[in-house]
Image (cartoon, rainbow, N blue to C red):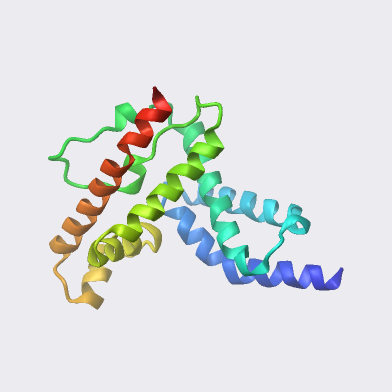
Length: 182
């Protein structure tokens, strides 16, 4: 029993900040991010016995966090993907702009997993510089100014790469969205 508590505490202490930073990228209020984090950690503690591989506990935590983020979008955003389709002249795009509302779908959790898997596949196929800027900005919450300072690239170049990454992700998800919503 003591080993279980130690392992839970160690995991929570080592992953808490990373999870919170990840969640904050997708929610606008710190209170919401904290609530989602608490839900993830509660699910981790309550589902501890079902975890089969400790090598994959971090990916499990982030998968649960993604699902909880998606759930929070469903609760707060009544619009569907069709209302989020963006024009090509829009200045700034984020990952949130291309995630649909799956609330009305019967297999919403499955569809959410499919979308995240597809996003991960498309990120792997993306040019390295686009992928890296996207990951730094969306997942690690680095500002374009921070990224520019350690890469030596102009901020406008970085913003352009991020925009192309988002457009590529959006284009890559269109067929999947059509299947889900038709």
